[in-house]
Length: 337
Figure 1 (spheres, rainbow, N blue to C red):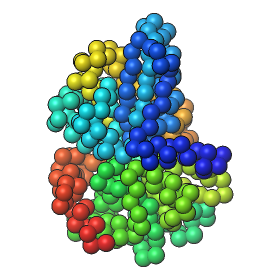
Figure 2 (figure 1 turned 135 degrees about the vertical axis):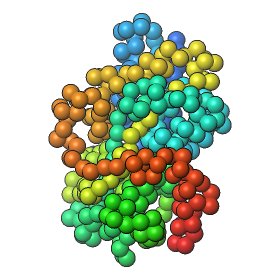
Figure 3 (figure 1 turned 180 degrees about the vertical axis):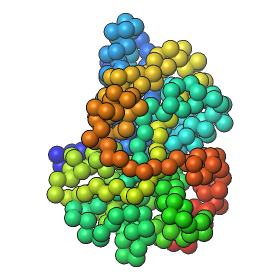
């Protein structure tokens, strides 16, 4: 499959600011909207019709599930501004916390579903040109002079934030302190030629525009590219240590109560934990939670040492205040580029 066939429509959707995909006929009893992050669009294109069929069998109700994708923080801001999402399926807890602080999600949203309300996880890895001509093996290689790194914007994407935090945590794991981590991350981001507004935009920059020596992205995205459009073009590289990128979900209380869709929306998120949902998740190269599904697809997911945000940084709230708030460390680093 050619890059244009795989990514043209998502790129056009990004240009429009938002994409929607219907999973059932327009005239249905209930319609749900799942507002999600950028590189999960293919996953939910398969999840949604599977859930619609499941709900028809078990509840006898016709249902439509629409999906919207973009940079994760942009998406949450859209929901806070009035986009009527029944559920959000994000790639970082910070965004769901922002939704909770706005009063749209429960303060204890992590307790509403298993695994801290994260039905799957992934991690951040590298996609390089075939043969890895720059010899990129680990995070420190991304900071070398002459290496061009493609990363989405950490100010508006969870994908970009995970890259930033993974590099920072790598420096700490190698015995460095915050000053050493800041130096490494500063050099890495000085090597970024352009900041895209979403993970899929960064993918297009790397694969179609031919910019960069390495794309830093989620494991599922790198694997998708390598499998579908890679061939003799790309290689996947796993660093020595990376970050756990659990993908949290939540109900948007104000919307489901207004629409009367709480039952359906709750069932939709629970479906992600079902064996059928976990199978679909694994097939899209996200790491499932279900032990049986994990075992079945173990060959897809190489062992990699990971750390969580909480282990290295204390909390997402602390990360936001120190690193990504206006005037924070990230802004200070980028100004010096």
